Length: 189
Image (tube, rainbow, N blue to C red; front, side, top):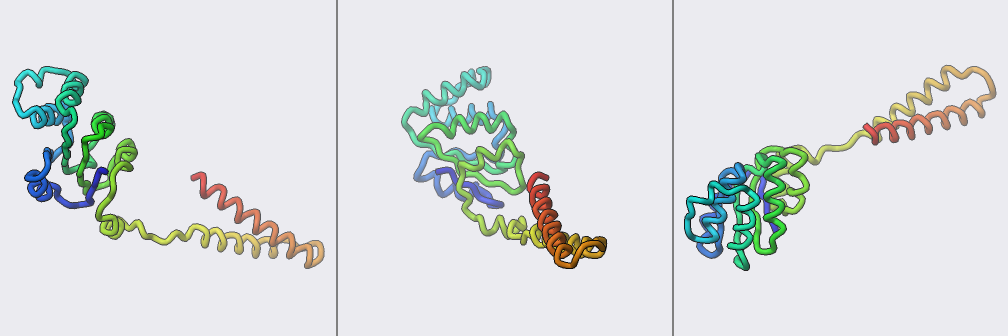
C-alpha cells in the first residue's frame, strides 16, 4: 500500500527505514530520467555511466529486469510537482508488485495527478482537512429554499385573479418548480 503525508518531510522517515528496508529517497520526483537512473543504480548496486545515454523506455526495461523479486520503497517529497508524463512513469512503477511509495505534498496538485493520488493512503487526513477548510458547511439547499420562498411571495403579490385557494396552490407549485430548477442548474454548474 502506498502512503502519502500532508506537509511532512519524508527524509527523517527515510533515515529510519533505510536500515531495515531497501529504500531510495528523492527530494524531487522529477526529472523522470534522472530518477530512473538513480533507481537502477540503487537496485543493481553498481554505477554504469552508460545509463544516462539510454531512453526512458530502455531504462524502464532495465529497472524491471534488475528489480526482479526484490522489494523497494521509493520515497519522495513534493508530490504536487508531478507532471502528466512523470505520473505515467510512476504509475508504471506502481504497477509492479514489489514497489511501494511513501510521499508527501504541501500544496494542491494538478488534476492529471489525482488518479495516481487515489492509490495512496493519506496518513494525516485530519490535519489536511483542518488546514484546507474541507469541513465547510454546504448552504446550497438553504439558499435554494430561501429563493423558492421569495418566488412564492412574489407570485402571491403578482397574481390578482382567481380565488385564494387556486392562488395558494399555484404559488406552492411555482415555488416547488423553482426549487427543483435551482437544484438541477446548481448540480450542472
